[in-house]
Image (tube, rainbow, N blue to C red; front, side, top):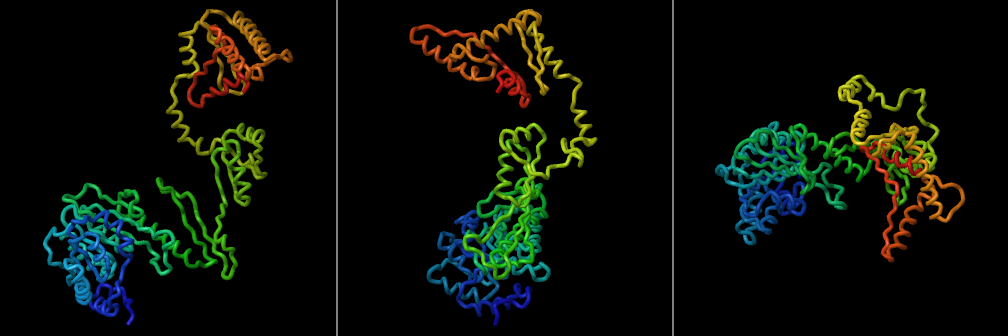
Length: 503
């Protein structure tokens, strides 16, 4: 006789399980994992002193192992008389306080609020196929009845959509908090005959009063951070995503059809929006693959926002020569700098200007966007306001425009003088300053201009003067030019300084 049922409904039949355990004998049958796989999650939600109802215990060693690590208040029930007799006989001497009872999980003899926890490993999945889920509803209703306030229903399940939706809907209607853990296989521990679907653990916590809004959470692994969902359909969607990913991994571990394209969409963890599409193409049957090179990853298209010096797109083009690398850069000057100073060489398939406007993007100049910008603008003129505030402090202000820049330099004087007196004195001061730089550098060659070598040697010259005068007790007081550039972020302050010093 085969151990597998002929129909799904047989999973809910007491006769089937009688035949199953008689045929199985003393060999333990572990649904969805043993104690080693489940201990992390069980110890997290079930305390040692809790009274625990184990629903559909079968001949699993899980209760025995829990008993051995300190759980002494376990009540094990199963519908099969054969397995209950066998388990009581197996534990009579070594674990006399570990009891097993033949009880129908849909109508137990226990009083209301008798247990702090109910542990179900595969039983909900087994009975959910009977009577379109009616049997499963009666079972979880009975579990809810015998749980105390604050008690937890801990259900190990494959989370097939009809099963998990039935359970989640029931406990949400009761006002319970619902959390799902998706257990992950340890790296290198996957078995060829393991379930293709991942194993989930459903945790339903009973509250005294229903919550105003449902608490629905999903966690990855035993200790993964919970991700909150607002609706049951969102939680079920997350379950389907992990199941699809697990099935894909199972197919890749075994074999794939070279003619089929396995695709996986990778989404942003925060927004849920697609980021990458992973397409897997297997080798044809009989192809010889070098052992160190069992797989390869091909990047077919890359979009970079912001050119910078062009180093990253240049690297991608050289490292992945067959990939399409597209760079978006708003400022044409940045492109020229990257080409002239950093050796950036764009390919020949640059965007044709005849295709239309590319900067700003078309979406930036749509009527609704422009209207919002118009509403945000105030009637104040920034330059006028700045000049008014500066004039309220300084009696004399001279302005100089910077070529190819929107900024301008304001020269403010504490004395009331016109440009005819200020400019000649500035020119004379600049000549004296340049002469000092030439003498300090020991050069009598070509005139020194602001921003060349003389400017670089000014600081070492001042340092040497301090070193020479300091030991003899003399101070070195030099009246050096002071420049202050005031402006907000990205206002062009560096451009103003570069205009002064030439760097």
